[in-house]
Image 1: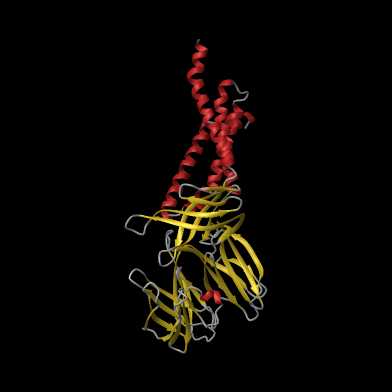
Image 2: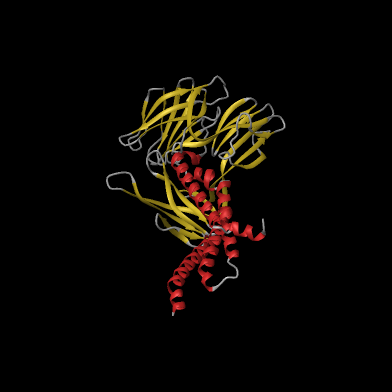
Length: 458
């Protein structure tokens, strides 16, 4: 095939039609995938970032460049045509810059706290080890994408260690957590307590499980907190409205109720399963529902077909022949005779160098309901002071744009965290330039078609 015929084939209308049909098919496929899984990220991984899409975009670029070369030498009437084609190429290039060098994540701020770490969609698998239980050494750290490269029992993802091997044998993208608290025969396991706090407006039931005997677990409820453990707590843990529960024997719980009101003395006593205790806060009463002196949590995951607010990605990990579950943004402890290992599977956290502090968070409710109609954050920005970020007023600072995305509430419905969407798009101005060239090219094409021929006729 001659050189000229190759160029003609690459610049042909036939290739352009094939590319357009391929892009249309991929777009339709992506829409179907997103609708099926209710997950835009799934559509990106399966379709929009697939090699099929990159092949289609590559063929489009080749076709555009070949068409421009085929028209050489260019004439005045080619100006709009060339501008539009160059604009499309620049627009694609800007999109690639955004894809590989941009940041799109979220920043969660607690009221009164500050943070500069943005959570992005990239996931990392990290392994730590310790021989004394206090200092840990990182043994393994790797970015993983189990959504597109799924491990199986036959072809697991393996991490080699000196004395054993960790295998990831299954990945579940949409998993429902099933957690049970069961009695344990191990004396080293801590106690477990199921309690209920209730008044006219609030009713919540929770399990508290000691991570080990002699260790405490704290449930922060916003205006109050529940501490379950063995005593000897630091003074700062006992400030405000605090309910202190301490295991006592096989079927009794010692309680101490402290109030934020300094004039009220702590209320002490002993309760058994079935007993009801008045806390003195907001009309809340405590019910002891179940107590086990030694217990442990049994966690498993059930696969579902699509994304929901209740689902999370999860891994089934095999260590020394025993399968265990590890969900996203959690850790798994594994023990040998000589060491303890901690395996984490988590979204990557990036230090963006902008330390924001949440000073205040406001919610506008729909009249007569608790449903949020609007919400906004007052944040302290280095060098700018306090700035308001609302649903329609983002903050732009240091190359980043911060949008008010959502918020998190405690069990009583009080907001405790503001969630900001954080975006940095280094390809934005490249895409703007490409779009401008496309518009100018189209204007020139229509102008030349309408007025250029009239000028020649005259």
